[in-house]
Length: 119
Image 1 (cartoon, rainbow, N blue to C red):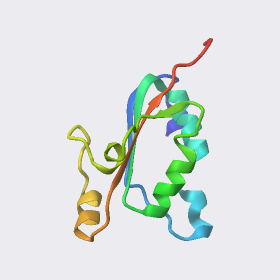
Image 2: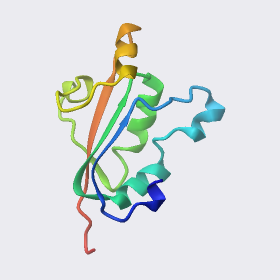
Image 3: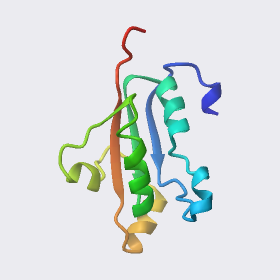
Image 4: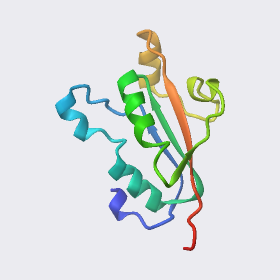
């Protein structure tokens, strides 16, 4: 679907509690990937927000290894609560409620699309 969207057409993107594809051989199916981030960078407006959430610690590590270091995005966390606490303007999902009920801690990553230079 992302490939069908026009450049700079989205002001905010949420990827909330995607399937973590726990088995190593299935990691290629994870939604948060360099390829997806490349497409999001194309379709997102400068200054727009990318919001990621997971309760799976391995997927959190996976996200942190990709999203904050992607050249098109800036991670906005300045202190631990910035990624440990859902802010009121984030929708709560049933997956988040299930995670909390099971004793898992959700994590929330807020990134901003950096301005394009010379374009």
